[in-house]
Image (cartoon, rainbow, N blue to C red; front, side, top):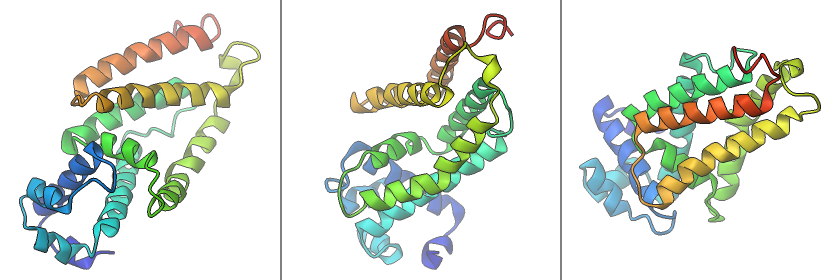
Length: 208
């Protein structure tokens, strides 16, 4: 735990976290200047180095914070409680919308970090991702009723395809330099869910 950082008032912590999310989400790890993060957070560069020894420490700290924050919001919305896969996804979407209102660049940062290939950090990112999200998703899929879906459907593969489509939607916005609008995300994702239900659910289940 970074005691020096956590001794700061909560609003200052959040400014530094959001500043890091913003800068790292717009650039690769190597091309993200600490000075720019300090400027975004409204503090001096020397003070930023007082809380974090180097850029790698800050980056991995922000990744861990992003994971913890995401899990807190997913838990708050009960995302892993239903046995209905689409209800899980809908709750997850609502959790992320609420989260992004407090941390506007967190989604862009996590996607950028997940695909970061810098050897200094990539292995640690992937290991941490599996710890936080891998087992949760597997447990949730095991509780889904296969009879709700069209015969012969591979549920794991279907979930993977929907997950990649969702990530691709976000990635396209971020790569284009766009700012993610939480309300538009909610609207677009709801439409995607309706479409996926019409394809994958048995007739009758999709109309519920």
